[in-house]
Amino acid sequence: MKSRLSSLQHSQTLLRIFVFSFFTVIVWIGFTLFQSQQQTGISPELQQMAVPLNPNIDTQVINRIQQKHFYTDDELSNFPVFRVVVDQGGVEHIVTTPATADNGQVAQTTPAAPTATPSASTGPFSATASGTATGSGVSK
Image 1: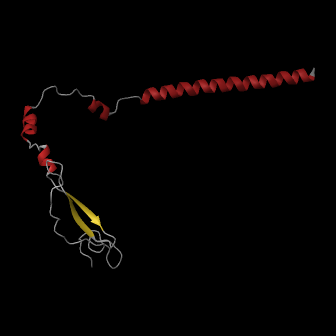
Image 2: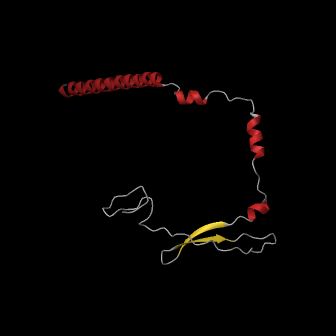
Image 3: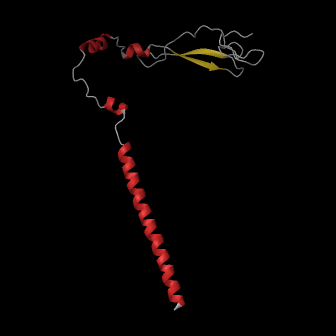
């Protein structure tokens, strides 16, 4: 009889735990749903993006686009392309990539005139003697 009473008390305790847990989960879900409903809204950014577009076409913009210069394929093929090449000694050279002629042959181009080569001590953010950078481009 004592073991049956003990078993009944154990079952009653488990039932109380399950009922309390179920009630806690229901309250938790209800609170979460209430909180999410209170926070749901449309941000000002989204409201601004939802404004209808203007269906009228601005003809002045189209006229400005039409007046811009258009380069033909021939004109584009004659533009030289400049590249900066660093040799093994660390010296930078400007090299022009030759443009192709109409027949597919490489046109003769003259190499670009050499310019002053930048070094680590003369850039706009070069390090001074004390180890701090200057913005003037002149090293001290």
